Image (tube, rainbow over all chains, first blue to last red; front, side, top):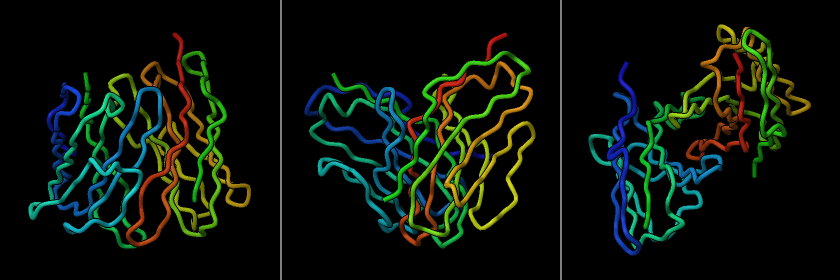
Length: 115
Length: 116
């Protein structure tokens, strides 16, 4: 079965640079979630989209922005990168935001290292 | 706000033994889902099992089962006949059923090691 695809899998950036992470949800899934997992920590919710509209927002820095496109893929844009942004970034998808909707399935993650 | 607590940072058992991981949560919501996710050394987040709060029957998936106590807000995971491949970090997660706000809230994780 098709899974969530994330690219790139690894990314190394310098401080103050910009990074773009991409997520391709499972086919027919219309909801995308972004999570950040720091070293030795649990994943923290950043932001979610349902049908190309932002549906919820967590502890996402103002330096980060995201959107969901017409083909349902999503991109997380990160600017003015800081050392503390080094983390594993997960994208997850599900089949809808209606109450009682489906489980979130995770992609393999993008490991971002900021030097 | 919801919180999830896993009080066992690390656990270790012998292969073929049974192990139970604990999880408690705090919420004022009545409708929600609870999950256990497994994160092996590859760091992939893999769904292990799901429980709907409105269901009294405990969920079971092969060797994995849960003990869901809604009144006590407790959701433990039992792994029977443990295998070396079960070695991983296990996260308990809570998801409220609220339109537009279905983010996962994770516990701190329990690192489980299965010894040969």
